[in-house]
Amino acid sequence: MAIDDRGLQRQPQGLVDILDKILDKGLVVAGDIEVSLANVELLTIQLRLVICSIDKAEAIGMNWWRADRFYSAEAAQSVPAADYEALKARIEQLESQLSKREIPASRRRERKGR
Image 1 (spheres, rainbow, N blue to C red):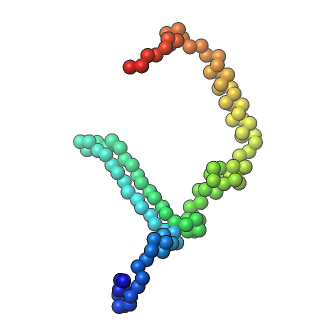
Image 2 (image 1 turned 90 degrees about the vertical axis):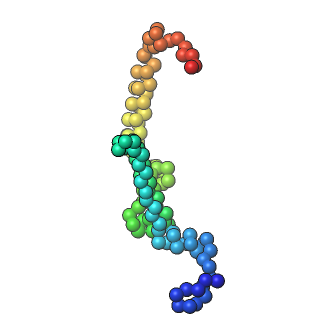
Image 3 (image 1 turned 30 degrees about the vertical axis):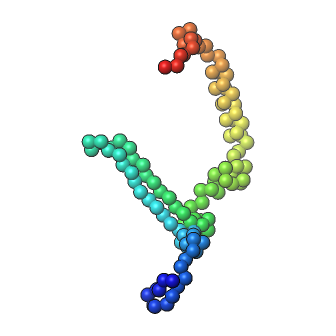
């Protein structure tokens, strides 16, 4: 048993208690990874991780799942039918253009593996 600052014994916290506090308060992990060679930056990876409950996320203004059609039935139904039909027509037009193209004789031979 651990003893707190007041000299009272306190029970060790379990995983459920810790997870409850993280979801209630929120946890942010941020970090950047940079790969450089001779002072030339080749790659930068920015890591951002937010762990919190949905209620906490909405309280801080994060509600991207409401507008994502994969997570929200309302967002999936919000695509106007005219936009959907226009996209279908454009796809059909592009497919017909591709089918009309002929492959040049120099490219008709099969490529062999290396």
